[in-house]
Image (cartoon, rainbow, N blue to C red; front, side, top):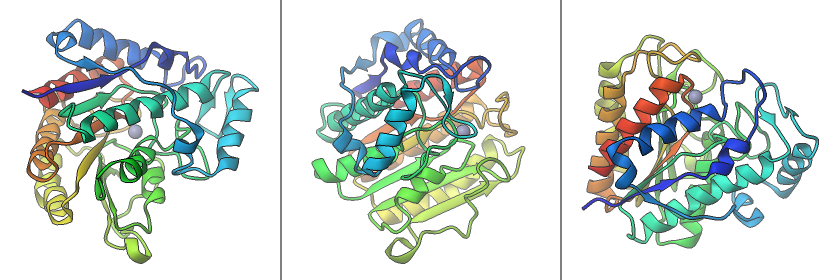
Length: 312
Ligand SMILES: [Zn+2]
């Protein structure tokens, strides 16, 4: 039987981004209500976790960047960069988000759990080693990949990022690293503007970054084609020990920040693909981490359907 872990902490709601910001606490309030009201509430295994230590964050970010985020949050509610808002609590909550993802990775890598979903905020895939960006403070999933490599038998990690925006931060962390395959399918042109097909990694990492930019209006069938033609063959060739998913749900047709036409069924289909890959290549080991998704209704139904597929 599949044992699916679930990472959530009410403190994630204390990351206050001010009035009218799309990356708001209500996102998680809706997700949690949808899940707890559904059949999934009793099936998921809730994980307890602590904030990540500075040493864990240092797997990707240098000490002076961590200091900068910490000190900046002490100033209270303000913009850290043109998009990313922090408040007094944000530093601690960003550490807690990473801590939750690490706990999921610990349990899945040891086989205690089959897979896990992490309902965290702030998101992570835009945060580069040296700068915050796009609502993200720390590069959550990149830190998780590094943690797995350092603390478990996992050597080769594949990150599949289907958030509608390109994960420039995750890409930057592994640009020259052949031990982490970073794959992103995203709308282009769109924020942050990176993620062209020619960005394939550099030096030893050349060939270990795969970007699949898609035009606005792409739908479930287009995403299915991308999985069949590009993502599945690349992952099978790489043979990862562990799969991480940057699960954004902002490619949904009703999302206010992008212009794709994906439906809940599309996210279910993508979940099935990554589950099969994890089963065939990684002993099922898969951890999925929430990134974007800004229409509260369809975010919660998409997350529900994603988890329903994970748990099956
Ligand atoms: Zn996004």
